Image (cartoon, rainbow over the protein chains, first blue to last red):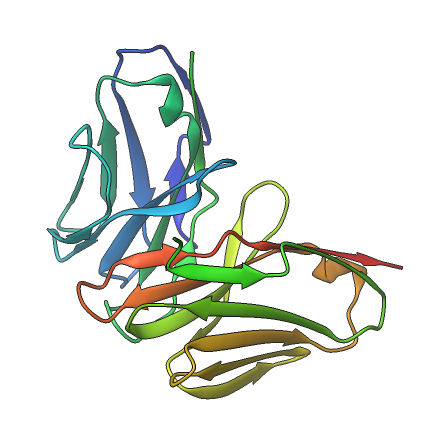
Length: 113
Length: 109
């Protein structure tokens, strides 16, 4: 079974631009969640999608948004990029929302200049 | 104040030693996760616990719900265990995730 796939692996953007990151979950997994990892703040939860609906959200500004498609693939969008948005963005999928473990992708490393 | 506290932050051990990493949390949770992250970023989920104890190979994870505390033990440590170990909790209300700051483990041959 293929693992969680995130694209692209690396991305360089300039301040003010927007970016879209993609996550393809393991086949059959309906939950996709997104995380930001920085050296200063560590891992932080962004949001979770289940059956195309955002189920819960972390404490991030509205510039961070996402969506999930009917095939469970998910995209995350960050608008009006700031230098502080430079981070490793990870997504994880799981079978359901409660009782199954998380399976992480390798992440997208975003650099904002 | 962090909802999830891990200790120690850094740990160096000799190959073969028994290792314990601790995690305390202050919120009501539905599950606790132990994650392993190797250099380069990839994260692997080691355990998901809501009660008791789980064992996988040389790894053992325990949780005490009343004391809001979990431990990850590594028996007969090996250099390939060198990684960052992260404790995460799923909140009972709202299903959000909170993460500890991680424990960086180095096992020396």
